[in-house]
Image (tube, rainbow, N blue to C red; front, side, top):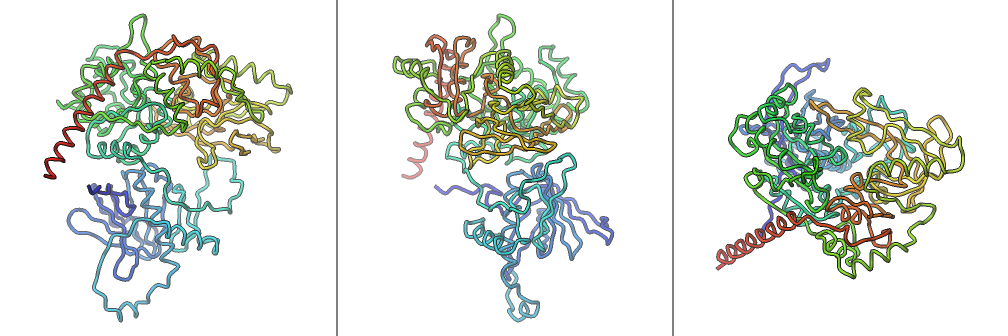
Length: 633
């Protein structure tokens, strides 16, 4: 079977909106052509020079890329500008899937620098060659291209091209100009040191690639999987593969939404809790700003679907059809839904048990494809994976019980880094962290770090979305946890545990943190960007740290923890024990206090739903095998 490469996967082509402007000497546009659905291809002509070809479906336009500037500050939003210097033409690219654009820019930068190192032909030599005109799409980036450019960079300092796409690259001269960030007072520790270029890492496995393929084919997809199967990683890839203007990434909780760079589902929908009558919800959805979301949305992503209530889902489906004036399910919006119903359930209102999303009237009408990720990536120990799978479905054998009771004696403290206690209730977390911080020696030794918020008036919205607090109080000896992936290769990942060992002298007094992975790092403020109601972008700049003597089970969703202590005595929901246990990277790094097998519960309705899904999938697989078998006869 031949697997076709998805558009943009080779780094040589884009599907996007393009505006071509002819500029005068003062930089103003004298002519402008807008192509809403353009195909942009990177190729080579008969002399191996790099060509940018823009196709509007009728006549392709080609531009020679010899001297140009790249403006890539907004590439994560699917936008960039290529300015051709001698011709004074600029090509503005927008609404491009961000991952495609990132790979395209990396391919262009590296191929161009490699080409610059070879001796270009003069006009006379070109005439003498007498070659017929040709155009061939550029070959995908390979290790040899990267190697060549890394060698060039080590020889010639100013010719470096970075793979960080938030910079402006002057490709004609190979210089790089990083725009000053007005709201950042912290200079990089070593500005002259350029990162070594490498090929994009972490490929999708077969299951993840199948989900992405189903999404790109336009199907309404629900994909699930146990904890640690790479659901969030895949969701980010899906977000990066869709056009930004018509794609809305949402999640049932603020923290989950922040992980995928989106907003909460309630924020997107604009209908409050959804408990009002349908007519009122439709009116709310037609307010300015909210209506724009609904009408411009073509792809709606919902993460942590297990916490979305069935009634709310049905309400959204009806609102979508009404507001978009369409009889199609969900008003014709493509739905990409993700989560594990065996993890945290919807929050119950009163004594009545909340219904799961798959129990919604519209669920089967809306969802066309159900898929499951089964390859666990968080844990590598097969016996621990089996233990977690048993707990997930509420099956606690004597062997599982024995292992978890025995874990109470695990000595998991190391190098001054204590275990993080996972709590079922938020109040316990705040109390534990405050008390432990106060108990550290040195009354005057604590330093407060204040966040820089883009809109201090919307601090409540930011607190709900941001994984870090507005104010962080630290002392030497404070147990902390990283709240963002900084350098995956060195183990500096979201959830990595550490301890504050010192503070820098000077006005900022940045903390030195020694992590469990053996790295000691000076931590600088990082920025989180999230969308609020009306499509406004909010940002918070703060140290990527939080106190880690304790953390709530809800806030730990999506995290991987190195050393964790769990008390399951106050577990009050199905799936809570499983979520807590599956945060641990290994059984050795886990300590379970007062384990009682009765707290491990899986919701029977969910078990029936998953059983039916697997049965349907096996039937579909069998019919596909029959089809392929008959085809080959």
